[in-house]
Length: 328
Image 1 (cartoon, rainbow, N blue to C red):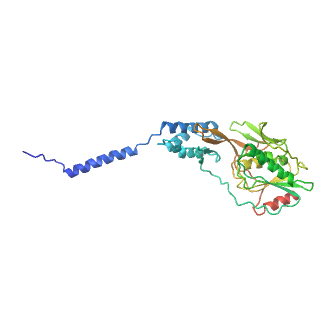
Image 2 (cartoon, rainbow, N blue to C red):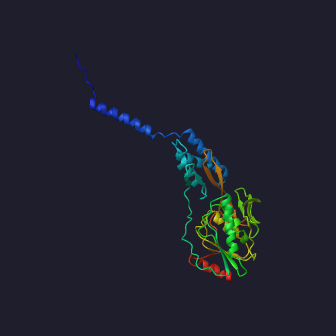
Image 3 (tube, helix red, strand yellow):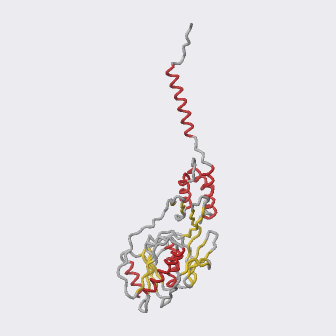
């Protein structure tokens, strides 16, 4: 019986077969992963809200925007898998202020081009004829907001007297939060009436104001103190202090004082988050906080970035300079 002799050595044949199998595996690994329907649907919801509400919605190329976000999410199977794509979307919005709150408690920000940090503010000795009010970061709402606003008005009342010739409103280190109790709190020094606006991309202006112990948006009361205080000398000088760690709602308060007679600001320009955020609830319960309008002063001068000071002063001299001006 004649034995069949293969023209290709068995070792070589096995090697070729192994190489062929490896090549198939490599090609399969190179194939793009498919995003699940659930993940893509969720991402479409997020991008849809951004497209409809972003402060920069009129200047963004949404076709390019969505292509980049979808590419970042390629292969995502769960909502959590879309987080890197959501972060990219927040970055591409270009407002530095929008954010996403996941149901897990995770907060996602875009890559910011601003820094809201500064050295610890120095207060020092306060001249006896000057009233001093510190307005800090505050993120609460409801009854806590009322208490916060009342505490500021109570501090103004405690500092006020016949000998007071002017006031210092210290916003240094105020990173923001809820602006409404802040405005209601400093209301006795702001004076009554419109003190700022939110201006949307279509040019619509919504006024915010202080009246009778209340802060309001478009005449809708938001925060009201229980015991309203009126300063003894209306129209007294007010020196407003800001630094690079004054941000968001802290900037709103700084803007509220812009255009007030007998008012001057000292220190450094603010962080640059002077835009108004609106919270949008997503289908899974997560929150998408989007910048939707620009803060403007009582003359409708829009900001949207850093709020400048009238006098740039080093941190160790800002109290002295503000006091000197108040005493003039």
